[in-house]
Length: 173
Image (cartoon, rainbow, N blue to C red; front, side, top):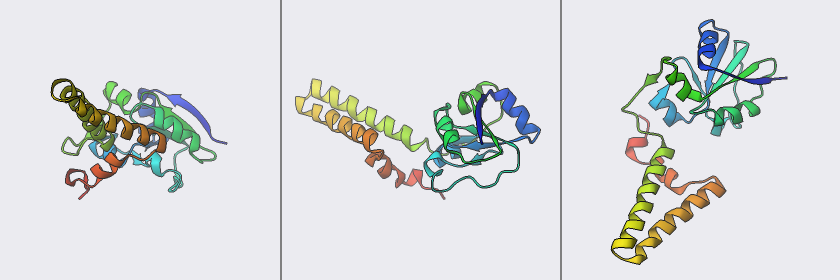
């Protein structure tokens, strides 16, 4: 049976340096491309069910995400018998705050979800300002974007994210 517990960044680094553990990053590929812990293995949470983790050599697996929420979800779904699964408290944010090394690629685009948040926020703000100063019909823009966000949250599908994935700056290669 797999045991799951939490670990702080410094202790995780010690285990990794001693090759007692492997670091499993469950963020999405676009987030990983922008920054990741050197030597970490990418296994996005969104694909964990269809593409399970294979055999891992070290006795411990440390799961990392941005802040810890996805790592907790992934750890609960990992099927790694005879492995101790550890969740890195605070995720990569805590890792960086501890002054530990991170590979960064500032030329990689920000994550698609952050792009969605920036665009949706901008459209809602524009709709409110235009509705206030120009014509009340512009409030419909804010309502439309809000409805789209509600649908995305309920259904788990985001049309804006799907569209952004096809944009040239988000294409790999």
